[in-house]
Amino acid sequence: MSKIRVLTIFGTRPEAIKMAPLVKEIEKNSDTLEGFVCVSAQHRQILDQVLELFQISPDFDLDVMRENQNLWSLTSDILLKTKDVIAKVNPDIVLVHGDTTTSMASALSAFYAKVPVGHVEAGLRTFNKYYPFPEEINRVFTDNISSYHFAPTDKSCKNLKNTGIPSEHIYKTGNTVIDALLYTVKNHKEQPKGLNLNPDLKTILLTSHRRENFGEPVKNICAAVIELVNNNKDIEFVCPVHPNPNVRKPVYELLSGKERIHLTDPLEYAQFCTLMKKSYIILTDSGGVQEEAPSLGKPVLVLRDTTERPEAVEYGTVKLTGTNKEKIISDVQNLLDNKSAYKKMAEAVNPYGDGFAAKRIVNVLQSSLHH
Ligand code: UD1
Ligand code: UDP
Image (cartoon, rainbow, N blue to C red; front, top):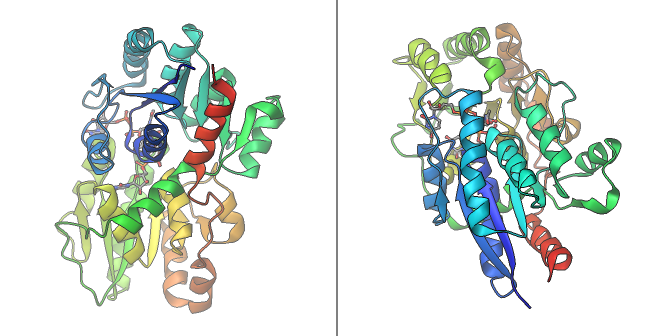
């Protein structure tokens, strides 16, 4: 029996974190699966941090990232360059993840080559095509192209069924982000480097990078941070700043040099996990952080108006705060002042997975694709 040829394509930091456990699981099953890894390198530095941590050496590196890149050139570069990789590997399946330009363009490329696509983290929806932009349409598009849908939760399975995807093509697997998180917190204890944090203060962690938050919303977030540190002498903010110039420029202009506000380059994943564990509150517009923080028992205030990850909101550990300055201030202040409100949100819950998502996905590949 010949081995099943599996080509995994990803390109940004969060895709790499979430695909790493799957790449490793495919390697472990090398008696039945032959794995190939292609990185678009839509992200460069923050992708390489993850590849190094998980010791992944891609078979193909498309090196597409450009300074302040745009969606048109990024999409066409990935589409064209993956064409050649798919032709060389001749895979039985292409695996893509989530909702980035890399996921969407690679899925399209595989479809044009008539290779079946497996979509990891399928079925997430806000049902608003411009929010998050362009991710909502990227995931709808990728789901439509895919033949195997690896959905993390009941809700994501239901979203897929509601769009007419047959149940037998949908597999509830949990989210591989929990595989990555559990592995990392168990095996790595690295402290965040270059941060001089005061152990007597409450740490509030902030990350933001969504396109919808460019401009006024980022400025509002920064203004709220300044007011919060001025009003509360017992807190400090830590902001690992995303390398996107649309985020980096305003954040450094508005927040650098301020007392009890620490700006830093993006942290390597293991250091970031340590920082999440140490934090008192997390403010973020990140998808991945919204999934990880609840399992660490950290209250999360989401700097967005909608989320495709409603499960932890329903459990009460995540709250949609948005980007209005006064609302951010009042939601953070409430958690600082009101012990019972804090306690309620700091419950450790884990609606997104149990650490075995990659195993389940590999089981599906082995049972469905054997020659
Ligand atoms: C991308 C994804 C978004 C995902 C986010 C995770 C799309 C359209 N967007 O957004 O869904 O949530 O990644 O972080 O797929 N840059 C660097 N070094 C890096 C990475 C980025 O300098 O390692 C800078 C470059 O100038 C680059 C810019 O950031 O052009 C934007 O990167 P891009 O991937 O286009 O958008 P993100 O905002 O990172
Ligand atoms: N992360 C990291 N270092 C940082 C900030 C975030 O390793 O400095 C991790 C975080 O734990 C999560 C992932 O990056 O797993 C989320 O990436 P991002 O917020 O860029 O993208 P999203 O999840 O919103 O697509």
